[in-house]
Length: 64
Image (cartoon, rainbow, N blue to C red; front, side):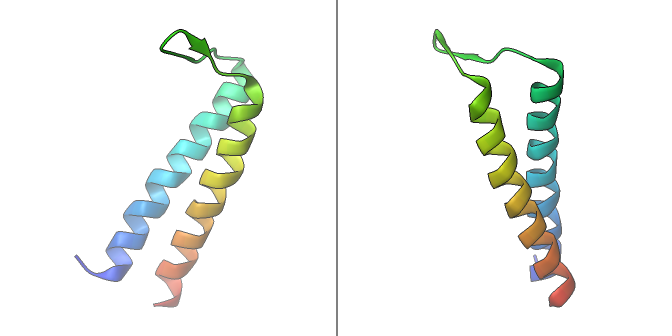
């Protein structure tokens, strides 16, 4: 696997995760993990982190 393909796959996966966080925020979907209900602010942090990682992975793909 070359670098461009890796960055494309990683960027796409992170973009999908960011999209799921946006959908959770917009639709108000609850998330329960082991009886713990995750507050909505967790998705805001996840959106920022996953969106940033997607951006960096996809820009690295285009630079190499």
